[in-house]
Image (cartoon, rainbow, N blue to C red):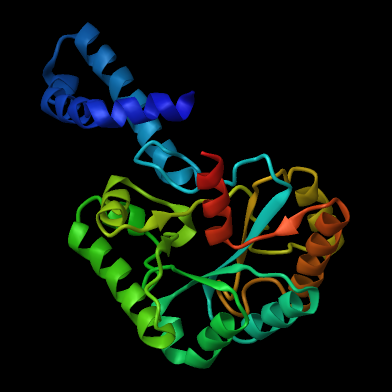
Length: 278
């Protein structure tokens, strides 16, 4: 229902038209009569609230369609890993996935891929799916993109080209840094036939003294059929979880979800099943 409403809003151009109207009327916030000032301030606040929701909510469809979860009818989840490849995390993650026979999706940073082509090839050879996570991982891409479509396009194209050169395949999935997005990112992805991916669950960047078991237990309470879990593969090496903590957390998630009857799929499998149901 909400997705259909947002789709109609986008197709009507309402958001763009209202933004242009507010920009045109903005001088009245300073020089207009008091009732007009108050009304405009309220409208600007509402508009910005919607805008920031669209940027920061990982599964917001405000700017366009994204892969936000599976069909919700199958007991399946997708494990995804952002920001790699890196040492020592990538080998430990791959060893753990291999141990359990689980396939996942890795959103790889092009610059890191150039430095560790061997790890990218290992990800591919072991049957995992590879997605694009920009070339240089600009931390504020969603805001820079408001003023520079060229920079957004460059990050997506360059990241994809590096991965195609290493693996022979051009990724058709993209997740922006932190999952933050805007209308420019969505438009560039749509032009290039790329699916933008969100997520439903994300472990904290830092363990903050909590045990892997406690954190896993908290996440497991909210996982549901079609969940997309966003792990980090070397976000800031030395500034995040210890390798052993990370492996323990991942192992507990896999073991408990399997015990509950879940199966693990790549995002490509999740999309295909979703389209089949559609």
